[in-house]
Image 1 (tube, rainbow, N blue to C red):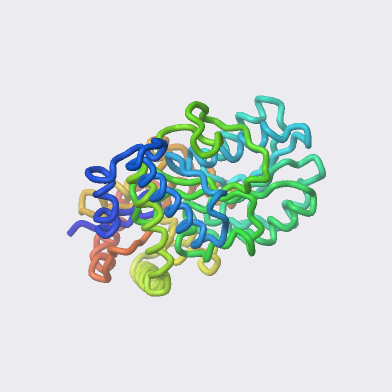
Image 2 (tube, rainbow, N blue to C red):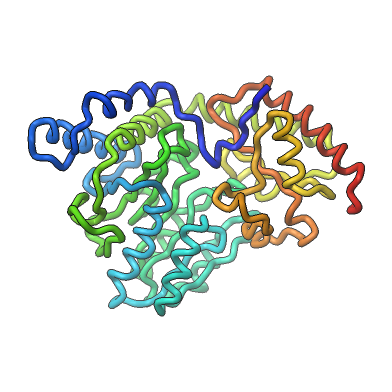
Amino acid sequence: MKVYLDNAATTRLDPRVMARIKPYFSEHYANASSIHALGQEAFSALKKAKKIVAKNINGAADNVIFTSGATEANNLIIKGIARANRERGSKIIVSAIEHPCILESARELAQEGFNVKFIAPDKFGLIKPAALKRLIDKKTILVSVMAVNNEIGTIQDIAALAKIAHQYGAHFHTDAVQAVPYLKLDVKKMGLDALSLSAHKFYGPKGVGLAYLDRNIKLKPLLVGGGQEDGRRAGTYNLPGIIGLAYALDLAYKERKAYLQKVRALRDHLWRRVKKEIPRVKVNGSLSVRVAANLNLMFHSVEGEAILLDLSSQGVYVSTGSACSASDLKASYVLKAIGLDKNNLNSNIRFSLGRFNTRAEIAYTVDCLKKSIARLRSFTPIK
């Protein structure tokens, strides 16, 4: 049996999305920037995709900027807002457990002379409003806190944090990549000036994402050239990807209730069995304030990479943390930030469930996991 439990890294393309985007490779292939009839048909499809996105996040279609993914979107928002608004101040505040693309963007800005501050989370991975209040002031340009942490699934109180940012005149951005469809994204209710998404996290194609950005906010583009997106992001539109993103997002929210019920039931069943059948296991982060598909566990006295490889040999595919740093075997900065003991920083596995998982797969996973942990603990020197 093959069991894929790494859906936070990427999801399988939904066959319905594949069917929807296929004609845009072979039939409706014109450049959406061309002024002839076929080009204008493509541009009309692009505009429709923006409206679908906007409807699902309760925003304005004109604020949607399509990108190559969330990494580009986050770079565009963090660097673009900071560099364009420097006359207002020089402080940038991000949480210490952001995705690497935001942390590295912030560090790059620090090298340019910006005053970058990192908000530490509590032991559950939550960014408390009081922690933001201690750092923010009137010179703050931008605050960025991710809606859902990619490693431990923690859900942040984005509306409360955005409210504080606005009280000080700062813009507020959230990386919502891991939030679809777990949170009802609403840019108005949440108080968002900017938001980023990536299609491959919700059963859409890879290589396409978006930056939602209020048009009234000054922005210095990262990519310049042909003037696409009204000069905010140059480059030929990836129309098949854009169509796929919009359709996948629409499906995710139309089917949200049933999806959440399914993945929560599978996740909870997985945890009940692990807790009952495998000793010395602990949940990282909050079990209650986290998305339904995430379970990040610490297995005492076993290396996480050893567990991952042993499970992989049995056809079960999981992660030790962020897929973007999978080749870097250093301890997770997220788990460090929430205070895990140094002896346990490399003993963790992230299980992230999804649309195509089944109860039979969970049963097989636990059976394999029991064998792996027992075998690995039998010869570990750490007790």
